[in-house]
Length: 265
Image (cartoon, rainbow, N blue to C red; front, side):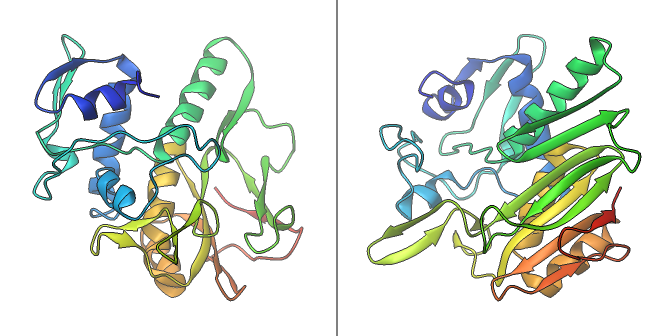
């Protein structure tokens, strides 16, 4: 949206912009995600996406993206200033923010906390496929989360039994477009500045929060099928990796069995 806090930050770089508390919370999550993934999750890749032709919404082409006119590569999310007392943010000149899926994950987290605060025993919130859940689950095994097959939309690869936390899937099979005769996807590799050349079709990650699951799913997918599993296991995270060739690999303790139920976290 042209009036969103993120858009106003992007179009008024170098100036202080008043924002909502939730926007500051989102910026904190983006910073933490960048640090936790060693920079693999980089919410400042908006100009790279635009240069590859992703300028309009795939769902609604009438909606377009706004960014600063003169980007600078020497700026990062950690250069953004926050005045918490006045709820104001100032982005350095040349920096544009693109929260991506982490915004959905954080929104799901906030939704669950608000529902629990209203007195419900358990809650699950799904926003655009990013999930957060906590409290008493409706099934004895926990919250049952179906993992979709990126090669066969509408089909399920497996089902995860989750006691609580966040679940997110990052995929190179969705959000695709063609620019100058070449097909692209929306996952930019910060190391190259272009969409990642990965053999991963999708990664589903279970973490302690929805925004964290989204960040690590993005980071994992950039590492290829073998590297993705090793990355998640090194961090003690559970997940399922599906290759572009259809191969299915799970972290230790999980088994990918179509329509089966795997214990997760």
